[in-house]
Length: 277
Image 1 (cartoon, rainbow, N blue to C red):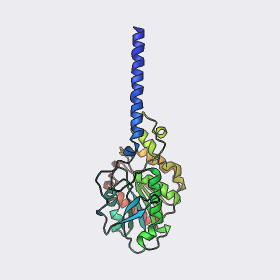
Image 2: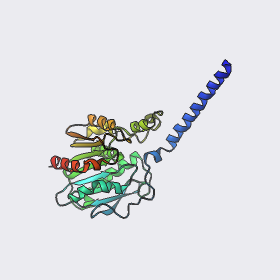
Image 3: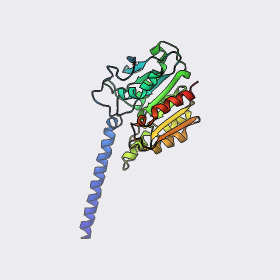
Image 4: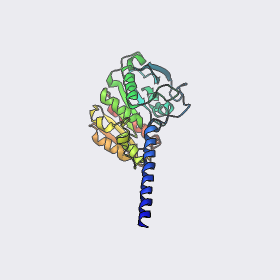
């Protein structure tokens, strides 16, 4: 009886370990689709939701085209360089920034490679190389001088991580992070607590907390307290690592993608008015 029980126990343990290994293998093999689940069929053409918007293209270092939606700033107004989340598309970014375009701000929305019908494979290194290219090409895109004092870097969800990395490497007048995470792999471990994601997925960590202290610009973080995708504690941890001046706006009833329903647009405009010279 004891031997049979021991064999059953050993067999059950072995089956559990096999199932665990299979699940871990699934995470590793499908990490690109899990991290960058872009909407199929969503095209960057035509421009929708951005007043007076037009499409521009840049060639990345490896030759992959980078698609942008841009809208000219009114004279003397800042340009808002915007980065979208991983599960939406460029039209969602247009909806989040239209109120700024209506107020005279210039807008640059970067489409990720592999999204919006564009070629290429997304990755942390590739997306960051593209974002640096866009920043360094702002004057060519608008055919006017755009000093760093006129550049606002704004990212949402995954785009907030892009914004943090970019703002740590390039100067700006202000940085806005909507629904950010501390580190992407920590957020993944929240959803997959049985797996040490930070160890089994060595790339695409998007470690915002490791570089946010390098940002030398006023910072605004916005987050919903009922966010089921990125827990609000992630934003709070990130905020603690950032330099002053900084502000954290929490919305008690907001989830991940509905901050604008609870006043985020108004808060962003008022903060920019107070913050920018």
